Amino acid sequence: MRDWTGEVGHWAPVVAAFQQEPWCQQLMEQVEEGYGKTPAILPPREDLFTALRLTGPESVRCVILGQDPYPTPGHAHGLAFSVRPGVGIPRSLQNMYRELESDLNLPRPESGSLTGWAEQGVLLLNNVLTVYEGAANSHKGWGWERFTARLLLTLRQEPRPIAFLLWGKNAQTKGREAAILTSVYPRLVLETAHPSPLSARRGFFGSRPYSRVNAFLEANGQKAIDWQRV
Image (cartoon, rainbow, N blue to C red; front, side, top):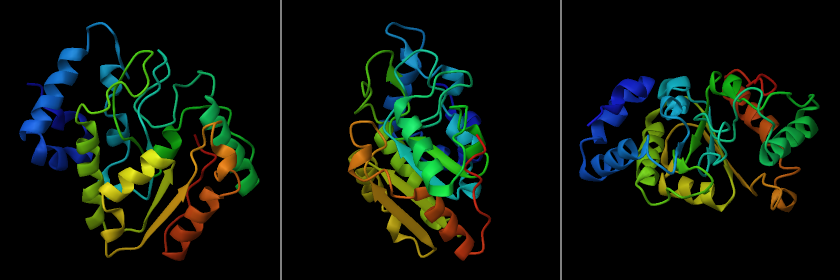
């Protein structure tokens, strides 16, 4: 079985602690067997752990939780809500940028790649890390939910202030499962509607997540996130 610890950057000790457990072994086998077969699995295998490689546990300052990767070929590249450079900006991300413009009075970024956020300590983590092409949420129940919950649980021990943006019921349920409020260190949890066109007007627009995260970080002696850097 392929060892995942060499692919997850500084999360390697965390993943090593549970990848020998039966549930994770089953997940790993299902994922590795699935790549190269039909229907195609997204994101591409080399992008599976992009979020973890770019944002190690020691550098996490904000967590944005997504549901699962974009099921459209060429879009998903391992970061929640993000798309590859040059790809048209999806509607949920357009709404995130619209709120950014309103919140911080900044021009909307022209790129849909959120690599710049990840490099500043924004963990863009999907609840489920893979999906079948053309079938959203098709890998629900494979075991990714437990995998990502274990990752989030480790953040309880990180001494830095960390903000959590939980947009929509899926992310909010995930936050409760991962007990993100049990840390003794400074934490900010913002729960709002999802930025999807179906729900953004029910509480996402006007929620001012970006300025609130930066105010929290600065109040705890940390540098603000440059949300325009993508």
